[in-house]
Amino acid sequence: MFPDDESCLNYLIDIRWPTGYRCPACNQASTPWHESRNRLACPRCRHKVTVTADTIFEKTRTPLTTWLEAAWHVTTAKNGLSAKTLERTIGISYHVAWMMLQRFRVAMVSSERTKLSGTVEVDETFLGGEEHGGKRGRGADKDIVVIAVELNEGKGFGRTRMRHIPDASGASLLPFIRDSISPDATLITDAWKGYNQVGEDGYTREIKKASISRRISLSFTSLGSGLCKRGGRQYGGSLMSPKASRLR
Ligand SMILES: [Zn+2]
Image (cartoon, rainbow, N blue to C red):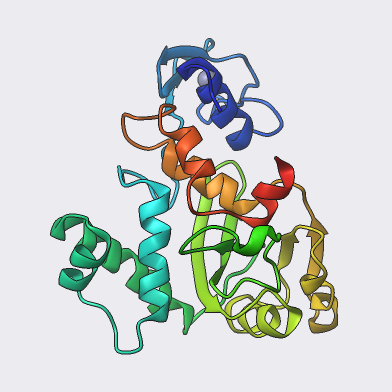
């Protein structure tokens, strides 16, 4: 997907500063210097910024596919999941399994207390294999996780919630949205009809083309040293977003 580090970084910069780079120190719009693969410097005040900082998956080197495979097991395990089991099931180290569970727990426990607010992007992702029968899957696929992520302007992602749902119908999506997101939030979704009724619950809906799973994927992908090298595999692996496939 990205021929080299330079194009990958530029893509990351576009995602993070959609209206153009602006230095957080002197607040000037400018074309930053590229200090290194992941570091930008302001040509005016020389303040340095790490492009991938401040995302929820900051400092993980674990690929997206592994994270979402883990999410699948975590959201479907009836009696909880131990790090030992996760280690065995998806073939990662105990340390990584433990760290993932910690982050999932933080996300899931707090979801019962406070709802996401502000601008929240909602999307679904297929897990656990290919799209069935060559269909697009939505409504036909049984292995769907719906994900909601707060978007912090210029700062990447905030809190996140996820749930395993049987299908991508409104009947499955709406309860998750009601449980997870404050009704005064602005929801960013794609044009999928399963979201058509959110207005009745008071949500403002904005329809967007880019899918969150692609951007989370980007966030994952951008972490660690394999910045661009792994990108293609993660977009095209066994984990497919309905939107990602549609955009192709
Ligand atoms: Zn500056």
